[in-house]
Image 1 (tube, rainbow, N blue to C red):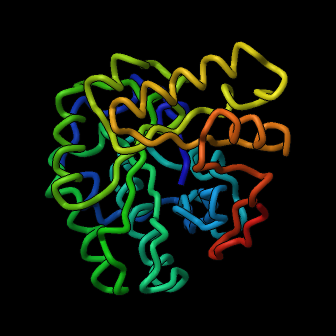
Image 2 (tube, rainbow, N blue to C red; image 1 turned 135 degrees about the vertical axis):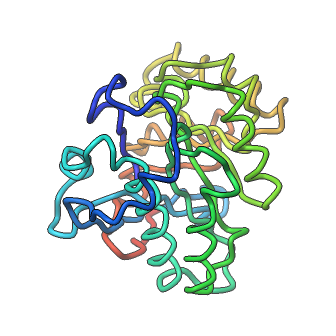
Length: 262
């Protein structure tokens, strides 16, 4: 459910601190939401490692249109609603005993206390019989981190529950290597700006290869996103990246799991 609340409403519009009020508000969101799913593929085996849930409007609206209709005071409820919707749909679409994870984007600054804010997600998983151990949470580094220590506590709490954690859009946001050193997630998603045209860009190849080596030394797996051409995919194979995502492999499908082209 890739979205950027800060891009939509402006960083200064966000409340200074998260609390239960926004999540528990009886007011409905102005726009109905659903999810599209796009696979993250292990290109060495052709299997799906995870499906990322991407927010859409129920009348076909894009993520940008959905975000434009979210009032600043409703961002926390929006975040929770997206999580729950993704899990409810996954419960009916995923193979019950399969290995594929459900990857959900989340707003670190909308989590006031990790164990309290995950309750609705766990309740949804119980309702639809979805194994919570298959949950992967992505947070994007282009959301300004107000309190890195707080985000670290979220990652620690999620890891204790068996969830996988990932930094999304690495290499294109407000933070970089310092954030990686502080947070040490399980996964690192390389932004498409680094991947686009990598086959013809020796500097991009050097940078991505160095990031992969560094991540491996930290025990972190890399995912390349935004792959659009066979040449880009081959360059990534040569570098040693196995987990890939992009239109070349599969476009997002609304309330469905799209077939994978490898």
